[in-house]
Length: 194
Ligand code: GLN
Image (cartoon, rainbow, N blue to C red; front, side):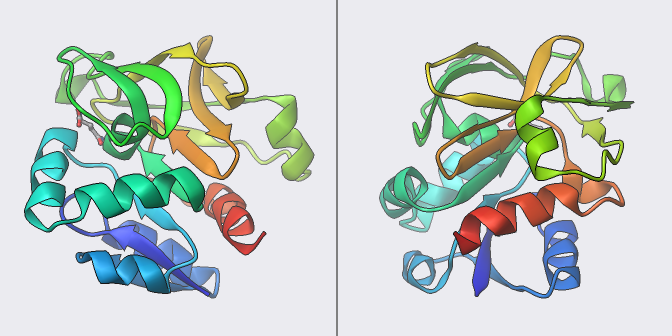
């Protein structure tokens, strides 16, 4: 199986390394035809406004909007912003795959970025029996505000939902590619293999 990483902009390489470590081949997605050869896609962290611009420039906007609604997808930070069906501060268009509102840059500026332990929900604990402590790296992260019905929460941080899932669509406001653990990548690959 090959797993795509949207490679127009942002934190691509750390995901590639994790995926390779788990024995799966990563594909840097730049063109629409590449969506046909992958079992799932990671939308990495970066700058969501820039990504929207580049997605349109590369004719990826519409094919990706279709892909993320039916195939395994994981959006991280800017990627999670792309997946939300409503974006605030400021509002911008999105791929509308997950019923939630995200408020951009809700923790403040770049130098207010932080690392902290996350609280797993029962849904995550059912997957991860190791009880490994998962740390969240938050870099100008958004906050998830209103979750639609049927969107599950996998991790919280100070009562905010920071990783959510509906069907095969996953969104995290923190960056699991920047910590040592591979658990969340393993979880996404398990969705791709289903
Ligand atoms: N602040 C960025 C945005 O609004 C996201 C930051 C990130 O991906 N780490 O797109």
